[in-house]
Image (cartoon, rainbow, N blue to C red; front, side):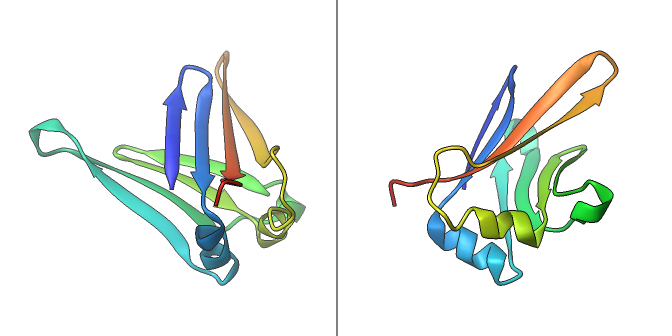
Length: 106
């Protein structure tokens, strides 16, 4: 998994193998070591309910950022596309954009 965090938002890019793992009910979790003994955990898992408007949901806690994706949205990623899935949330006046892409290079 590759995660890019920028002023524009957060992009999660996964491999086709990681997509298969998610489709089988698994999770992709990576913990990154930071200076002074700190860590941050980044992850993608199957969660959410499209009927409740939670097809793609970004969750953040201190030292953790997770992207929850509904099963039906994950299935859409099985068809090769450069678009992926995208969502956004509004925090005050700030719009936070996030996306999930499958790396088509292999």
